[in-house]
Image (cartoon, rainbow, N blue to C red; front, side, top):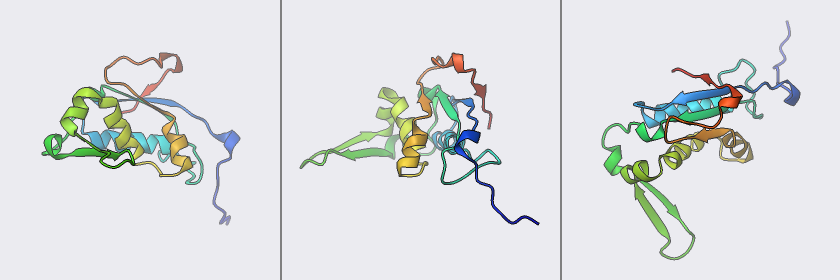
Length: 144
């Protein structure tokens, strides 16, 4: 009986392209699926300390759904590190003005907060509408 744990090597990693349609789906559910694909947790060769995930394209971000009172109560905050530099944006304003940023923040928040997570986040493409410019990669539709 072999009790060794298999760890995938860099040259054995095969990356595919997946497309997720976010229309009429909750923001968190779409982000969780995208994070799972980016990390590679859907593969039997998942290795926590390596970036073995796939490329993810998310379309129709402007049609994503926020449940409950999140549309009016959720606030995105960031600080410029200067005095009085706190910026606040309500979720309804971000969804109207910059839905790609809203989805990107949701997905990257579910990835590791280190250099590995930043490397995984580079494989994410987010589009507000149904058109995207990655048809040459022949992405597969990911249903969940």
